[in-house]
Image (tube, rainbow, N blue to C red):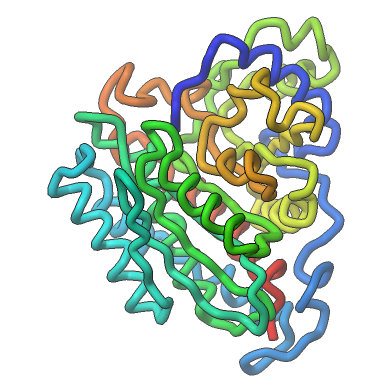
Length: 352
């Protein structure tokens, strides 16, 4: 996840004024969300492999496995300097795993890097994307940033192979997020040029760090003055870093609603930050364009960043306060995030 700039407090204040009113209270699970396992295309009683769409999706959510996730996390959490052997090994790991799962795999080479793109064709060409970046800042193990995300999307990919869909599933391992979102821009720009229809995408960027201790979730200054009610809600939870954040544009409402319902079902607290269209691509919103979802925003596609909030919670972000290692992460928390995205993505893909 790329580093925040000085204007984040202004933008976060604008966003929180919109997002907190529909978010779940940290520590309690969300209460928003009108769509879920039976609320969007392809669910609500459609038949699939041996049951209703709802029962198939429930089985996929239940299949998410903590031990498998931990094994993949261990494989990816190493110093992955660009063009190093570990960087190449991680690229190969993504490609080989997606191939084993039955995806059509492309290594999208662009000027300076390589994305790994896995495609599971649906009945139509509309793409729902689940993604994470596999590069890391130099000389940092990058367990949270972003081995947690890569291991997460690979487990999402495995679970989602249990059904066939109306829409096409794309699972993407982006390169060079840390040097300017170069990999995701290469894919998003190509998609625009080709007229590809992308109704939504998730970008996992740091999903593993959680704390139930008070005062472990930091906020930019001024939030309590500008938005006293929202700040009071966070204060009532004693500023615990125990929730997942969704940073989304307005057109991602369906994916957000689906995520929030499944998050509620697994008791995952969430906070939704819905960025108003008026500032979505404005330079003033640069600090919310800090991960691969922004490459999609900036060319006109919807996107959602799924994050534990990086340096506002994890003191080892970019190895600044210490090594970013697996031992500091919470597997149970990450697994709940993965389950929520499995359910939401299957819902939006539309089980056949």
